[in-house]
Amino acid sequence: MLREGDNSMMAISPKTGLSGNPQTIYRNQVPFLQAAAAQGTSIQQAIKPEDVVQAFCTPSKPADFSSRLASDAQKSSSGANVTLDETQRRILDRGLRQRFEAISACLDEIVCGRRVPAYLRECGFLSSRIRSGLQPLTDSVRAEVAWTWFGSTDIHLKANGELTVFDQNFSLPTGLQALSSFAAEGQGLPLLSLPEKSGTRGITVLLTPGAFTSAGPGNEFIANSLDIQTARGSDLCVRGNSVFLRMSGKELPVSTIVRRIDDDLLDPNCFRPDSLVGVPGLVKAWKYGGVDVLSPPGVSLSSCRTFGKYIPDMILEFLGEEPILQSASVLECEDPSVLRHVMANVKNYAIRTNDPLHPARPFFGRTGTAVEFADLLLRLRKNPAAYVARPLLEEGDAPGHSLRVFATMMNRFRLIPGFISRPCQPDGGAPYHL
Image (cartoon, rainbow, N blue to C red):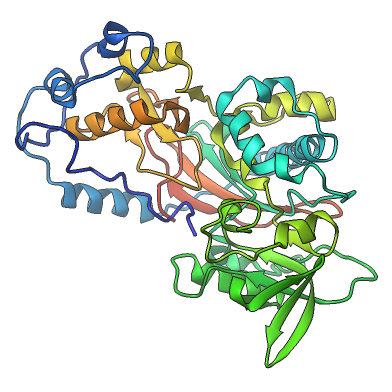
């Protein structure tokens, strides 16, 4: 399973085409870079990495990558006591309620109403994801889908107290186990619970790729919180539109699956045919009401950063309300004019993957190295739509903190008490490991 804590380090490929073994160097100033404009209208035009390195900085001294990574890890893990006042809590509660409801309404419109809002159609990356992830679900007979049953949200808490939404994850939220001390605190409620359903027969299981993964402890915590059994794809089978759990020579009917594997690995009959951790036929059984899946197939679309850019539009369209929480700025690298601007002013931007569930280490214009930048250019030439840019915080400003909060929306919205606090990165985002 790929998630925020996995495969999060940008690979510095030995096959970058660099001549010899150039020194890895830091630089304090990035020159005005016009490589993309000079070569054509797109970054996909040929750009030699060795030329980029030469233009990027003046050699000074080799960088110690091991000490840099250790420093990054220490900064990300060194927590600080952060508190929210009553006004901030109310803003979070009301603002996240808006976002949960608007996202759910938008996904319903796409899957059940078979209509894609115009502002999503205009984004090539999202259009492609909708075709591959949601279009196979449009023949669903389900009347209701709990799209936002459980989700995490990364918030940038600025030094002046302002709250900005950075990312949301309704597919595979991680880190809930860090809030175990808040369970039942003053509320008599568990951190997480299942939607109430009447007249259902069958058991609930948590679908996991296995215990020996980086997300294994978190998945085990969720299973224990919900008092349900974990199962792998090989433990489940589909007959007709019903799902069964093989156990001790018997087959037990399953009514609900809490899935903890990626969308594209969920069902080899519907998504990636090479998936070894999914359940063949599961999506079809879900579409025809034979089993409930939490979180549902296709919900990973809402985790994409370009999707988050349009959530304020969804709030206006589907709820008729003004957005309460502001969203972090997102520039789509698939737009050639945007990409040329970002590359020409790269020292002011952070470059991140569009899909946080399949991350690479972000590139920060002020502190990146020449080799990292050359590697980034190669990645952008290959697939610019897979990346977005965000402005860096102003130099000299207090960076603030990144808060990860959790919420559920079943019969009603509920903000789970407590949050995870970490020092934010130069663009206000969360560290790339939890």
